[in-house]
Image 1: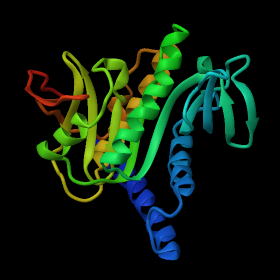
Image 2 (image 1 turned 90 degrees about the vertical axis):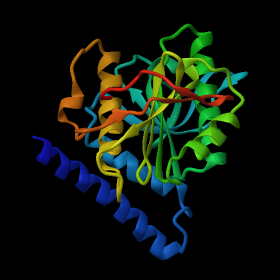
Image 3 (image 1 turned 90 degrees about the horizontal axis):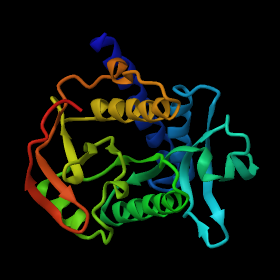
Length: 259
């Protein structure tokens, strides 16, 4: 199973990279069409989701004073009796009750993009907290980013002015060129995932990202299974260093183990 899983996820990763290169060959710039890059990822996600969930872009709405920032990808539960306040094609204004998960998509993740993604994440979570709803989990996906290092991540996390509570952390940040970052609870913070190989497309990180989305949606339905057994995550380990919002690195903590 591990070798089959690797080939499957490697094929998906190659497809993502190939489509990105094709649009760049016409525009001369990989970041020229953000919507197209979001659609590339949506196409991959559709192959994993059943008919219960749809993929939209738009806003989460509670009232005129409580509207989220625009979200790149919303995974919407179509079994909700009234999931939409408005929908036209893939654009939608969604009731927070119907939101299963959401993803911010970056062509290239840098410090500014990182700060923006976390601000968007917080805008959704704040609404859900006000309604006392169980909040869905947020994700960040980047086609590329600088390689993660202590110095880079310390600067990124220090630059974010948000409370250091677990709700403010996206569950997984996946970069196809730098790997995955996942949240931990004690203390609240993010940890880099260490991979057995660290060159080329991060197939392990991409597989972990997709499996975690599956897990979130299954838990929403009260299903307790292990989608990670179908993923290619062999040899991945949590780094012990914790990065906290507004603080940067707070040192090493005993959180090692498989994700």
